[in-house]
Structure formats: C-alpha cells, structure tokens
Image (cartoon, rainbow, N blue to C red):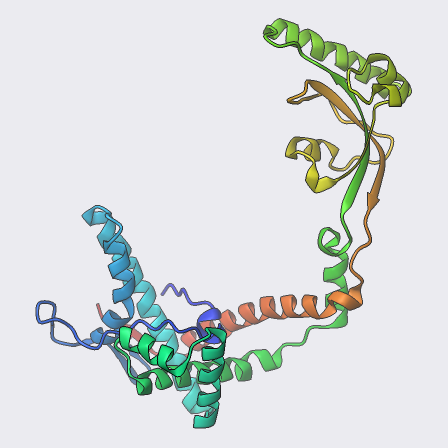
Length: 328
C-alpha cells in the first residue's frame, strides 16, 4: 500500500494547527464503521472523516469540475488513511516500548508553543475555541506528538552517527557553498549590430567576429585584437572590463564561461549589445568559510538527511511486520 508520510509529521514543529470536527450535521450523518484494522487496533470512518474534512473543504472551494474534485478528494482520503495507519503503528510502538511523558513536560511544551506564536493564555483558548477544541483535547494532541517524537528519538535518532570524515567529504564536495564566491576577470571583444539590420547583415557581423575568434585560437593576443577590432568602450584597454562575481553575470555568459580557465575565450555570443567574445584573464575565489565555522551546520544537514531515510526505512519495516487490513 502506498504510504505518504514524512518525518516532519512526527518530529516537526508542534504548530497550532489541528483539524478537528466535534459534530457532524444531521444531513451528513452516517453510521460509523471500521475502515482499517491495524494489528489489534481499528480506525473508524469518523476518525478518517475528521482528519480529511479540512482538506476536502479546501478542494471543494477551488471550483474544480465534479470528476476532478472527486479524484482529488479520493487521493486525500487515501493519504489521510495511510497517515492514520502509520500513527496507529507508532502509537503501538510507544506502548510496547513503555515510552511516557508527564504533565510537566506537556505544560513546558505548550509554553514553548505559546512563546513561538506570541500567544497569551487567552489567545490560545480563543484559537482552540475557533477549532472547536477544548484545552484537554489540545493537551492530548500535544501528548501524542511528544510521545511520537520520543519514539523516533529512541528508534532512529539515537542510532545515527555522523563521522568527521562524512562532514569533511560534504564540505570538500560543496565549494559553491563553503568555498567562497567565484569571480572572473574578463576581457571582451564587442561588434555591434546596427539597428534594423537584415538577417544577412547580422550574419556578416557574426562571421567577422568568428574570423577574429580564429585568430585568438591561433594564439594571437586577445588584448591586441580587442584594441584593433572591438567596439566596446574598453577597447583601448585591450578589452579589459574588470572583475565580476559569477552570479552577477547573465545566465548566458555564466554558461559560456563554465569550465574555462585563464587564457581561454568563449565562443561568439549573440547578446543584447551585439556579438561578443569573452576572454578569461583570471579566475579568483573569495575567502570561503572555514570548516570549523560550518561543522555544526553540516552535521545537522547530514543528520536530517539520514534521519529521514532511516525513519522511512524503519516505518516500512514496521508495516511489513504488522497486520494491516483496509476495509473499503
């Protein structure tokens, strides 16, 4: 069965968003029934409806045609049922491992949530009233989240070790992040295309610059050729247009410079100013971030990636060892 649950559902920020529905209207009331059996536990249709209804309402408000709306609601139903199954499995593991949380920790967690959202007690209660949730129901939701977080810590996080070699390898393989900014010292030769030129006239200009490119390839001085032929304001300086951070150049020029080393030139480029050739005088890189300054950042990044993979693997294994029956 397809599963669509990320680690964030279990160990993400405990934000104040809980979709609940205390009552169903008489017009939509149906007899409750079992929609899934997860080992010794059951999932009721009412649980599934409560979980998916906020999403279904948003879909209905989008104005899709009836077939599209039904398809999207069915997909949400499948996703929410899978989430409920995964939550039942994790709750069973919590009981099996005797993982507990006391009221003091629930109080502390709620205080952190209030501080993060700049909520007073009155703000929180007003928010819960809007979602038709009592404080006791809210505390139970928080308890479930904290317990599931502890389970993940016990089953997954505590078994992950990020080595110094892995941190160093990541650092060395990402110079674009930690190695400083790449800067190009460039020269150019520019040949302008007169306004309202015909295609044939434009092609003539291109061919003239291609002939100059042949001279560059043959080893002639780019600076001398720029002084002779370039129509750029920098022609008198041998086409020296200065140093540029790579990210400030246009995507077209960045692509043309990619992989070039000092002493090499681009192909003829058709730019807004006219046809141009760029010559790499030098390639510099600004001072990067020392490993000791970013070690913790890299550790956290690698840890999060491994946790996600390990968690999904653990959850798949848990599913394979469990008895799960979906009742349509």
